[in-house]
Amino acid sequence: MPTDRTPGAATGAAGLTIEGIVAVESPREFRIHPRERVVAYTAEVAGTRQLLTLSLRGSGAPATQITASEKPIGDPQWSPDGRRLAFVREEEIWIVEADGSRLTKVVAKPGGGREPQWSPDGRRLAFLSRRRGWSQVWLIDAPVPRRGRPQREPRPPQATALTATGVDVEHMAWAPDGSRIAVMAQQSADELDTSQIAV
Image 1 (spheres, one colour):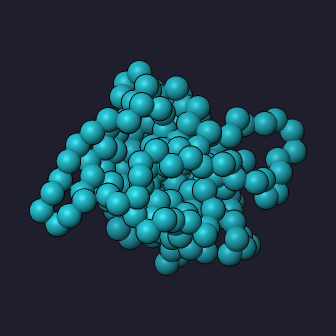
Image 2 (cartoon, helix red, strand yellow; image 1 turned 90 degrees about the vertical axis):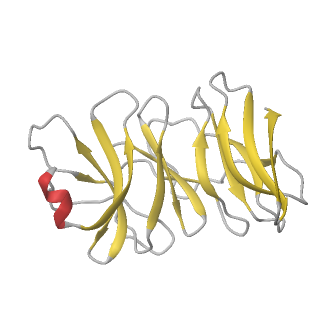
């Protein structure tokens, strides 16, 4: 049984076909694999929103339940190489291998984060956080997967703020070459601005 600290990998989950997606409650947040015909999505499983993946090849293969968390999972994002997924659980950001193994917490509370976005090379994650009272863009190095016995509770990497306090960032997007992040920010109710940040 997964604890309340860790999302947990799913074991013995019931299989779902493409047609079976409609049988689970409220499937949403669909994310297409960057290289393969696979979709990641969230759905209610036994009353809690979980992360699942499903082949789109029409083979009838069952879905794979990636998490078995006691708290809801959201905002899944594939790494550029499709080997890992980042997701949010109660304002903490986690990374997991595509097969559900090697869970790693990369953004912890207090502070927390939301809307993780991988850099194009997969080495960094940008995310939004209100840890200083404003919605700022923060950047961390994505942990390199280690073979062998995984750490039970590895220390999250150090995050760096890319935007100043005083404005709320609403949206962000990486440049294709990973050198900049475009942001849409709001300083007041009637003022919306766009800019780019070198990273």
